[in-house]
Length: 296
Ligand code: 13P
Ligand code: SF4
Image 1 (cartoon, rainbow, N blue to C red):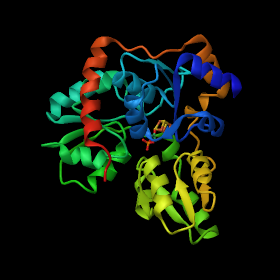
Image 2: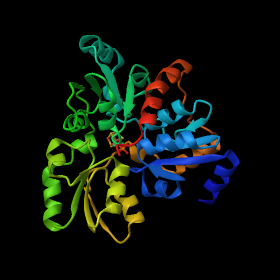
Image 3: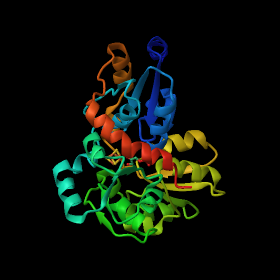
């Protein structure tokens, strides 16, 4: 910890971490949040260096928003499998075929963002799709797309992408926990399947779930999302109880370790590099989304 603090000062660095990061990473981070909050924080910071503890598309977004800053990504192999499910050529083919605007979830590569009309996160997907004049092509998460469809009267062409971690959470897992803890409210991420969304008391982004639990008068919650989100919840609300789905682990998020964070600050690498052309194009849909802000 001492070594890390010294390095952070020396480099004028800030550590940003996603809510699914390992507990020890959440503990050393200057800021922990959802994809939207992290992108907003990356834009505000006056640090020279951002150490991004999350997955590839999140670190890339921080770089796109801050092209002049150094964005360190402690493990370059931490690539979100869902973001890898969209291929630029196939998406351009869809665009030609349907003629609709492309709404891309932030869980996409910089190249896909560069051909998108607007981005969204799970914290503003409904608001973003509502803001579009016509039908949309929604990539890559089909479950998030289906969730948005419940609130908008618009043609939405959904890409068949998915999050393996959230797809693995079953209704059976939730029912089992609910039987043990009948008073617990069910919180779910919109990347979950429809059968989970249907029984959830609240569907929200990771940050949205934290905020909901803070405001709710309930004292117990079943959390249908990645299990380490419960670490943050328990830390910030020690008086409440949070039940995680123990096998809901995102292996990619866990690739970032404390040792790798320290090493990245010592060596000032691996660094996120994106071409000027892609940054210029991808920043347009990202900035449009940042202007829209959160759902409510
Ligand atoms: P949030 O934006 O809700 O934090 O979600 C990101 C993510 O990757 C969920 O799997
Ligand atoms: Fe990607 Fe799913 Fe991991 Fe989120 S939880 S980073 S969508 S694989």
